[in-house]
Image (cartoon, rainbow, N blue to C red; front, side):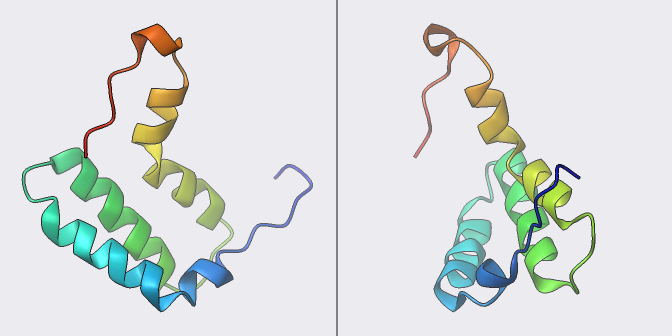
Length: 80
C-alpha cells in the first residue's frame, strides 16, 4: 500500500492486550461507538490475516483519527 509491510502478528500474540480489549468491550455497554471500534479490532486480531488488516486496524481507530484531525482548541476531551 505505501511500500511498507504491515503485520499485526505481535498484537495477535499479545494475550495481555487481547484480554484488555475484551474487558474494554465488556465495559463499553453505554458507548456504542467505542464498543463497535473495540469489537472490530478484536475481530481483526482474531481472524486469519488478510491484506486489508492494516485498513481495518485504522478503521477501528476512527475515533482517534477524528480527534487528531482537528485543531487542538477544537478537540473534545478524551473520555476515561
